Image (cartoon, rainbow, N blue to C red; front, side, top):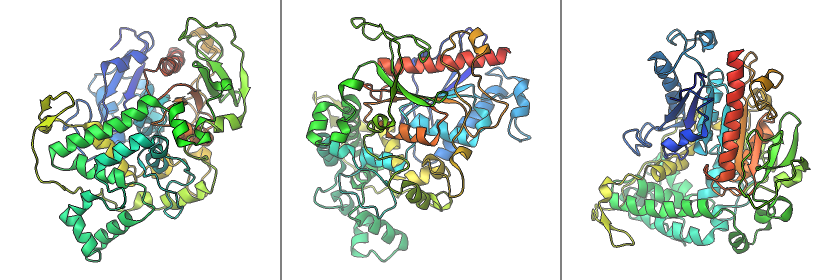
Length: 534
């Protein structure tokens, strides 16, 4: 609760799934512009209890949690309401009067997925969005990060157009990650599964049960990309605390190794894939260089994050030794932007549209259930030793982020319903893109004060759009959520302003990414405040 009287309210959605909120997250919001910032620990995350709980987990329920929280905070007087917005509420007799929309939602990584799903279901209940490290949790994104390094066969209807995987780009890390899963390198059936009575019965009698037979057949397919991921699923979510703790250590080493290294030259040379390094040349190699899509001019251009220009509301100086002379705009060809991709050929290539329509046509209406968790080990020692010969009790250790990320990744089609089609960025046949992916434009970045906004672009609320105005910020060197998804989202949603910091990774605390978040949040804050005051 800041001391300003702006009455502008923001919601922060953390990543993961399974991460949590920290006081530092409030620092992205100017206390002059935002009176209230709400930090929500999602189900099973942070200070929400029970920590790491997978029962009752789904994107649909998380979206409803965000909506219930909005109504609760206003209804109980914890946030200032406004009768102006009462008429704009969705038709519901039990919605309290004066409950207003979220003025801004800031979502990062998995938080982008939740923010997009919430805005899709409640388009009038959020006025603007800022996305960081764009993630939509599509199968191709999960397969990039956790998929087995096997040749792709387009017979599963999943992950169309994917040509690269993290397991190929980071082969040394993948070897260690695979070891921690219990999966036999020479077999698609794991030692983990063979030690489980229930799964062992599938091998001897696969026809005894239709559901089990289908599970067995799916797990046995040579083009199944997720055997390692499934191995971690049973260890992280099983009942043995020591097995869980060891699996969580291995899981964290894989994710944090990719998180910290990005697409470095060493990884690219080991992989031998020129497409991974095609963006690492002198023309776009500056540490402060951005490639941005301006939805007003409808062109891609280069920018420097340090300089004050019409495309930068706030200047940040990340290198005092370099000159800060030019603020000229250089136009970027579409082909250069497409070379920033790391694992896919694009939203509109290789029959992706048709493949995704086929995959999602009945997906959201199926009566699916999460994959059954098998406890494959007998209870073991409750003492674990780390590399410094220190011991701790794993029964008190709940690795919520690895548990929930694994749960959502293995059960992605189940937990994402009814948003599978929307998040795939492929509308059902016969429905145009702009009926799902369009918005009013973000506020003009040239305005630097409230008075400037009188003649600048306003955030439209009087006209209906399926999504609110949005600015997306993406690291070009982000190996957790590579630029592919952000570029796909831009192709589907041209009113989105996309800002790609070429040398930055996944962290929101990267100096360029952090600066871009602050700029975007400030731009919306000024526009929202001006609109409310007029």
